[in-house]
Image (tube, rainbow, N blue to C red; front, side, top):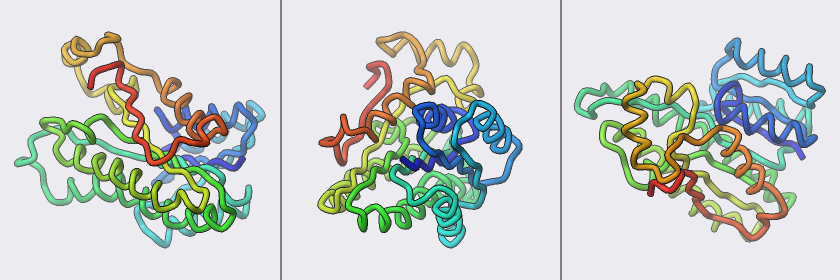
Length: 241
């Protein structure tokens, strides 16, 4: 399979990309901006014998997203799996946010997903097969104080997933999402140990999730084993919600 993963240079995205690559699939490592971590990830994957290549571009820009996808197709062929993982967070009172801050959240968390899904779905529907996996958050389900706009963007991801899955289902294309709880990534490294302990006190499994655990779910959703799973938001939060 050809698998395109956004936000593939770190955290959950990198773990997902590595899991697919380790299973022998061709993986397009995509990121909104050209950064050293992206090229380093490509270098490490190639050193392990994986079939992978890095592609950088502003995925929140519709035309650039198209160019990135066409570059992936030229290298590996049409994508069988699209993993919309790229995302950023913002913690703080909504009243203190500036328009530029919430627009950036919207562009990265929603815009990039819309653009790539719009382009990739055409190829998938024409072949009558394919899978889109969107990486979301439990805050898109329940909302989180001091993460109002982030919660809004992830609620949009969840709604889009359910609607697009129903729309593309007749064309043989499945769309699902993973609503993650607290996962041990750089995004959550900004929280203090005390803040993490306070949060985890409400998690029945009493720990953070790992990027590998989320990757395992993504691989399952793209597999034949999940052939009848469509338009679903799978919650992976240790039992918090």
